[in-house]
Length: 239
Length: 239
Image 1: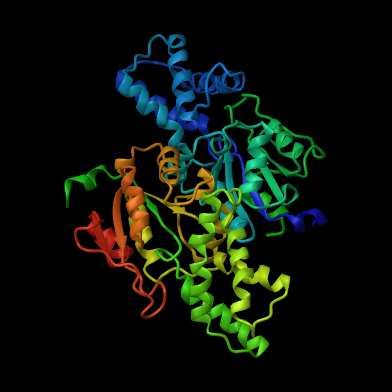
Image 2 (image 1 turned 60 degrees about the vertical axis):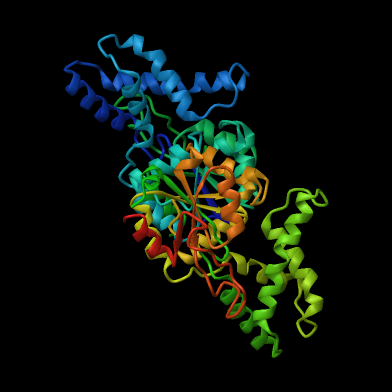
């Protein structure tokens, strides 16, 4: 075990894609809607288009075109925007509001709960997501994710990968950034955390965007730890 | 069951005294120190004096004599201040720092974990304390308190009973104040929450300040619910 690992006190963990499988969950809920309405939609494509609206929407807030906005509201704006790309699908306002909350009902990848319970035996394990606090809280209840605490971009009023999000997390955990390990399936998130002094662990989620969807990969030497899943991460941390 | 109860979506719960027994835990850790140093201290009195410094210390922040300060730092300032009242007790800086973190190691009252698990089956159950986020997170791990999320005065940079703390909690939970039940063993906390529209549940903790210590009591008609403990609260909420 490398010596820097003995300094680690807490893990901050990305959520969408790293902990929860948005692609499969949206397909499953979409197929239920399609079956009720007797329409055919490529729900995998729908999920990817919805998720792809996420970075541009945060960009509008960063540029000041929108005030600070909860992720729930951004998700709804994107949903309304993409409906025209799926003309067979008609959803009432109430149906959209319900479907929008699919992000609260995402399922965890199968290794998450068991691996996280191992990690919690040694470390503080905190969510650190662009999702708003209530979204993350509802999701944790739905999926049984045993966070020690829920930290969110909402508490910094900045989205990742703005440095304020990582700095706020370190401040709230009362920890030096060097004693925090950022865990994510996304290179840019780990790079953002590293820029303020966090250690980094890449978790491989090859199916985040579905088969052949082009999930992030990382070279062996790119981050402090490259793990296959949360169990592998716990093992590499000596648990 | 009264009709307002059907509107409740989340419980925000006070921590020191309501969920955890600071008086007994400080006595227990103090007695260990006393035994190691072979000195005699009235640790019940010590605990009460330490806790009594809490409101005046927050008052200094409210009046602008101190900038926003984490509760950990206020606890340490008070500890340093009261040492002269206990002249037989000598603690090094390192010993003080360790003893100061007794607030992270408080034990829960015996009804808390079981009662809260019942409450969580129906509601979001969130901490809402003047303790800082890292203090509350460590305490939850120590005592096994199964919070859905940890909210803190630190997130509002105001202490209870300032209205900003309750307003921030409602905003982060994405809930109308009328759908939140504040749970506390302290009348002033419930009054503060009620002033911004929360419903209120008083939990009786007659031994918070030790036997004869003068814990808060509440009349039957003073708050929406008067409960003996967390199990009684769950029962009164129809769980």
